[in-house]
Length: 231
Image (cartoon, rainbow, N blue to C red):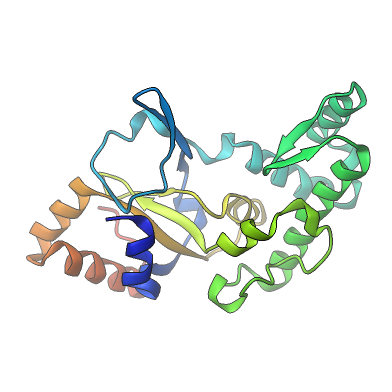
């Protein structure tokens, strides 16, 4: 089933809240498939071996940038990661972040200020479900050049996948919001199921005595009431 079809079929049934500390790994966004680079967000159901494309959430560039911003705030120019980017730009290099080319000090500052605004908004309001935001985002109109219109248009709630053992892993959308949630120690955040491992779904269907679709919906309904199950 294509991921877009699942989104429109299930819609809000795929949404629930979770303790962000329970999500410690992430799926890489791209994989090599028969010699071609493929984005892994295409399908909702997958039966492959995810182990080669799992990585710690804490090791992503986005996570490191947000943690640094939460530490330095308005003094972000003193952060080691900012300084490394600034040194590269001073040498005539271009730093590519979030599909944006940063080739001047002003653009670099704007990039960090954009996510500083995101941190401030989340610190004040928490992470707001995307259905409550529309295209406004959580950063207002400042430094909008750091994201394209199409990125805002395609933005959704923080994406997660259910792996073969029933654990949640971060998947596709929301890497910066997830990083902010972890850095600020938020107790709960809204997430959306974006992919499900077939082995887990088959096992859950057999355990509950329900069709795969009904087993998924029943599990998510229970998660909204009692938290995500360990298995």
